Image (cartoon, rainbow, N blue to C red; front, top):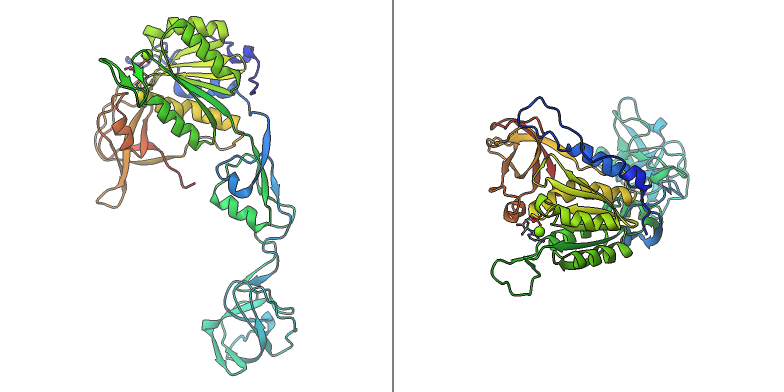
Length: 432
Ligand code: AMP
Ligand code: MG
């Protein structure tokens, strides 16, 4: 089970930091996004434990130790071109030199004889450079006649050759611990002849939804009821991170049911995530139960959507109580939960890449909170990237989230954006 840092570090403050009071609309008692993230990061630590997996199974997992190259890459000095291998001293300064071609070096089939003065070797890309040669002239620049090759001026000794160890020398760190493995690393590890890697163990994450109005897909809705969607977005977001998930289902808003569900969830998990039940109307009730089971702060964050957030621990598990509204769940997950989980998984680069692009249209905003607007990034008619919001931005409207490919992140002091202004975006998909 995951061991959080001491409860004292975790909950030593009241959870509230005043915002600067310079703007009228700032909410004086809400926590800035960066401060909430800092507090969360300060109270969690990487989970202990690793497993050895075949490199293909390592895709998307986090490397638990440095991988040191057991060989030179490339393993031998070889040709970067199809052409003719020769000693650099044979290159003519001017005029044309005619050399005798004494054989061919193929990739995987080295040429063993040693060319002497006035001689060269036909060579293919990737073939080991024959002894006494250090230069390759590409075949398009050579006039071949029978067993002779005519080479003109303008070449540089050492050209078109890949030196052994120039990519990675033996003993160098090929991939650092903390890297989430992408297709590039699978190839790199294979190129070193490494069949298995040590990755951090999967984090165990249990989650459930709270709300008397919620039904699961497959059930029939009664008047006033809705389908639970949060367990599905959470499943998707956690699955992509490679977590080992336990879906506890929908839990009604009753004291006993909630207490039981929190206990169950925390029993065999590193992290417990719930949605709903942390807004002002419901918080007192949930607060009492959580106070019995662990130490949890209820924060009001200067963020839109997603203002209420509970964070702390239940027994030995880290706990996130996310808001109920479906888009607020996704925003708070990406901004607070995901960086925390990535840190617990031992990953070293945990912050989403931000780009600056041009706003395609006006965006209204009041100063005070960081706003995450669902955006669609597209190339405009002028060939430049532009971002537009994807429609209604209500915190329950998942369809505008589905149409989005990024968040437009508007900082607290922003009082609106005009078409043509630069804005920050966080992309939903990276090139991994
Ligand atoms: P709450 O935070 O519990 O007050 O919920 C805020 C809003 O989100 C309400 O309209 C809920 O019906 C809705 N909601 C809460 N949980 C879910 C869920 N799991 N799926 C869809 N909507 C939800
Ligand atoms: Mg509720």
